[in-house]
Length: 279
Ligand code: HPA
Image 1: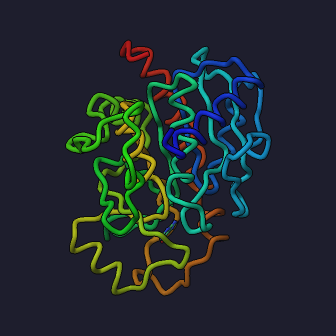
Image 2: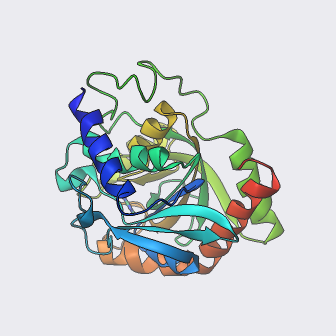
């Protein structure tokens, strides 16, 4: 058996020995956004370290566990903390949790992250609907033997971020008077922040926000047939756009600025999935 698939199935067996919960929505909480887990009517929690073979995050502020529960009666699995490529994991391990949540039953993947604003009209604290992404600076998580049980060798990428889900996010932001930017997110490997010249390069390429996650997860979820949507919290303007040096602490504390709008929007959007009969 393909070793990546074998590892995934071992993790799945391990999860199923601990919980029979079947989520419909998988929610990944980015840096500083883990608090959202408090909105969930928790059924159970599973620390990543309790899953044999599961990559365990080392980054401060990425407490690693699955939270299973309900948002307005809708079964969700929430990743409180994700694993990043810059921590040194194989890229197949970085996306393992996404595949695992799909195996648990999740049909929709809701990705969130903290990101640097590259678009000059953005402000720290803005929320941005991810319309598309740029993956060319990150390793492709599908490299290696294709896992035919999950998806096709050459997946189409023309609408990774589901149009219906995008519209729900737009509508809910408008209804709730939450300012919503839109744009293209680029994933770089990190862990160093970008240089000002790299940010100018990204802007020239049509990128609006930059971060160190999300895109590889979206590629993998698209491969295994999930419907995907994503929101970036613009925690800072990217390098060279202000005089302030960037720090992880700033990224985390800036997430607080958008926390209220973020929480409201995520809950309303998940309700919206049901209102639009997508679940
Ligand atoms: N660059 C990369 N990743 C980030 C940033 C940034 O400016 N802010 C939050 N995550």
